[in-house]
Amino acid sequence: MRILYLVHQYIPEYVGGTELYTHWVAYALNQRGHQVTVFYRRSAEGVGQRHHVEEGVHVWAAWAGSPSPTRRFLATFGNLSLVHVFERVLEEAHPDLIHVQHLMGLPVALVHSIQRRGLPFVVTLHDYWWACANANLLTNYSQQICNGPRAYLNCARCALARAGYSRLWPVLLPVAGLLAWRNHLLAQALEAASGLVAPTEFVHRWYTAHGAPAERLQVISPGLERVTATPRRTQRSGGPVRFAYIGGLSWQKGVHVLVEAFNGMRGMGELWIAGDESCAPAYVARLRAQATPSIRFLGRLTREEVWETLAQVDVVAVPSLCYESFSFVVSEAFAAGVPVVASRLGPLADRVRDGVDGLLVPPGDVAAWRAALQRLVDEPDLLAHLRVNVRPPMALDEHVDRIEALYAQLVDGNRRRQAAP
Image 1 (cartoon, rainbow, N blue to C red):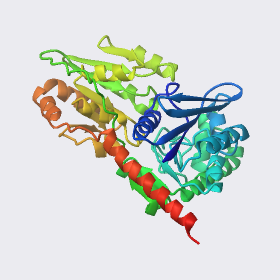
Image 2: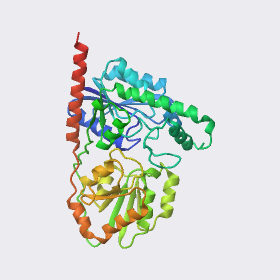
Image 3: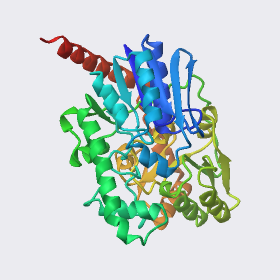
Image 4: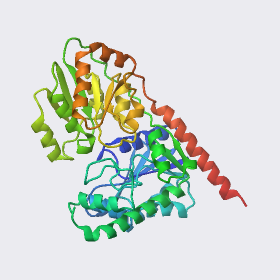
């Protein structure tokens, strides 16, 4: 098959769950003999395009100015330069199927280009962006979990708060109308998709409850890239319990809750924090100002360094304040045999078995987080119990088997329809 991946951003410029997933699956399918192309929007000034080949995978980058939050939002409604490059990619790659990983910062007209050619396409719902412009269902005005649009007035209030204009009530209705139109366009794109993929049961439930076509939405959990040289786990006894946070350094990830909880603990413990500090420098400065000498900041880690870190720690913490959609760091921790302490929120509550391979804690509750961390310091038998019950996550090969089967089914069905009289 000839497969085209459409994604909002890509490695090495951005390294997140969606970007890594796209990279892993693209290369796995290329190794299975498929012709694979990736198209993404690059962050760069001016207008341009670039094409190169990485180990057999064709990678196309297009740019039309650095995508600020406002530009990313407005791009949904149209960007001719990006559309023109994508049209060229469609002509050259001649795909049998397109897999849309994300459209943030890209025009919905790209879907129209796919439809005009009568090509099947799949959408993976990596987050909640298709219904929430914030993508994480966390409001900017109250920092509370949101359950979706309410006449889009709450969405407009959220957008104004994000832009720093919390009191511009005269424009509330026009902004609400713009957000309603955005969601209408994106809902049409999902309705036109040949198949929809949710990474977890929670995401499946959320999207079907908010109008996604349930008959085409299925759960296919992501697999984890096979690591051929995983560092041997460090055997330690009698030292401090090492907790680690590995991920984005932003308010909604709840790292400040973890730091505050750790600072009030008794006994021997260490907290290692890994993440790109340049994304939210003011937030990181606040974290550093609160940190005690027992807290280490590791900076942004390479893939190899992630595994090296996991081999040296005892517990991984995921203190998210918003709904995750999957959380690759949970998979990585379990692959390394490390228990997880996570917020009892959304998919995290489904993936971590409380008292079995980790602990679940109310999100944002500093006292509860401190108590959970303290238990793991005070009760070594509990830590040993959680560790022995950790199960390895799904491997990437198993996931790709399911994705490949879905592609084949959709391509075959599309060919039959086109051949029908």
